[in-house]
Amino acid sequence: MFLILHIIGALVALGTGLAAYRWQNGTKIHRWIGKGYLLGWVTLFSTGIIISRQGITAPDVLNGLGMASAAFAYGVIFFRKRLGRRWLRLHYQWMSQSYAFVCVATLNQLIARMGIEITFLIFAAEVSLPFFILPYVGKKLDQRYGFASKPNPLGNPASN
Image 1 (cartoon, helix red, strand yellow):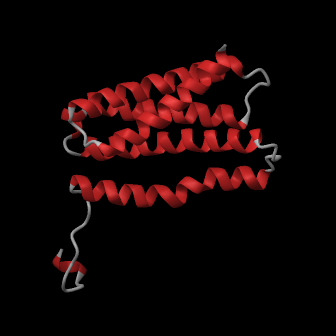
Image 2 (cartoon, rainbow, N blue to C red; image 1 turned 135 degrees about the vertical axis):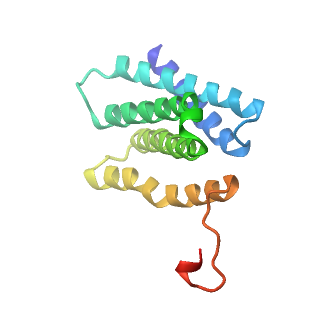
C-alpha cells in the first residue's frame, strides 16, 4: 500500500514539477501546480520514510534533501516582501534543485528495477548529473524572469 502511494507521490512530483516550468510564476495555474508538487513531495517523503526499514540509505538521504529543498522553495514565497525581487530567483533555484532530487531518485529506482546493480560509480553518476543540467535550467529561468546579465557589446566589464 505504501509503495503504491510512494510511486503515486513520485509521479505527481515528476508531472507537476515539469508542468511548473511551463507556466510562469504568479499565474493561478502555476500556484495550483505548485501545491500539487508539494503534495506529491509530502506523499513521496512520508511514504519513503515508512517504507525504509534498513536504517538510513542513500535514497533516504535524497528523499530528505529533496523534501527540504521543496519546503525551502515553498517557504521563500512567504518571505517575498522581506526578500524583495530576490525571492523569485531563490524560489526557482530551490524548486529546480528539488526537482533534480526526484529525478535522480526515480532514475535510481528505474535502473534497479531493470536488474542493473547500482555500484558506487553508477550512483555517483546519477547524483552528479543534475550539476550538469541545473546551470542550463537556471540560465533559462534567469532569462525568463530578467535576472540574466545583459550582454556587453564593448566587451568591457567596467561598462556594465
